Image (tube, rainbow, N blue to C red; front, side, top):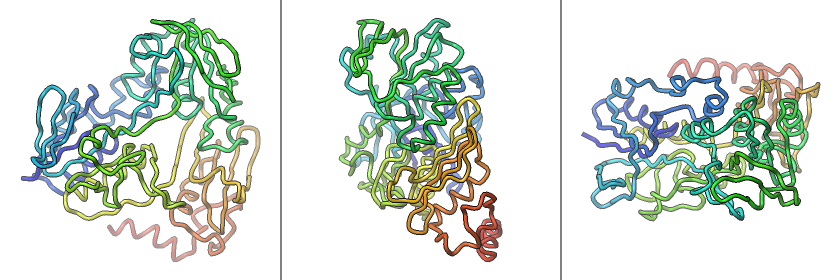
Length: 422
């Protein structure tokens, strides 16, 4: 009987377990996680913080799901090192778990910048915002009078700010960039998002950063690089994430920023696979190996890893960023390359808080931003993924009413019917 061991209990790990069980109904599957919660929807933590999602609805697998699939889940168990020769994983506390095939799906952790005066081990009002436990701790600490500083205006920082809305006295988001979500939005799109959040009492301090913190056990004020001093009752550090690769380094896996894998999600060591936020994937446009901390990519990679671990060959597709987010009812979808200066940016609609921006380069759609007009997102995403030459389509995609008929009749037939035949 094959022994499968998965380190990590989020999107990549769970989808890998599902794929293994789909192809091997007898193998022994174990999942270990250093978290104390069973698999939950990580994107839901801001909605838990705001009170829109109850604790019982945080989980995307029922309590009996793993029993029904004969998958053993061990929570509060952290891997310490891997013994490749004996095919065992040692856990903190002295335990050992044997495996035949191993998946590292350890995800990513918060990046903590060097800030003068910051001591997260002692300062009780400083938080990160990446896990369910982070959200629980933050929710317990806030009051209606709390003055909150969020360091970081990316996805994590803005979702933290949205989750805190209405529960605290004030919220100020600080970021060194000139716009919110700078890695996935152009300036025009970012301005729409920022204006919408400002209308919901979120304040922004851009082109500056938190450079010093005052308060030994509790932060009382923060100094910004532009010389402003802000009062602070709660500080949320949300400046980015880094792949969790410590366990990979214990066996000298090939890594750069993340774990290097091939198209089958195999690492540089035999019978050791990796998937999710801890790995580097091939970028669809550049062909370079990059870290994509995306829920959808982690899910897909986990499935691919699971199939290959169960000896059913499957290749992982090249990756490009796709982000679907909402802030206070504003719907935002961003995909691919949005900031390339050499491409042709076409704005189709810009009415109040609506925007459709298409990024076209060398006869290909390479990226888009949609704000409050997400109906065609699937078509645009498929055009990017399929690397479709726009000149070969039946009509111009810059037409406002783009739809599935943008493809030729033969292509439409393939897309409609081929998935049904599988």
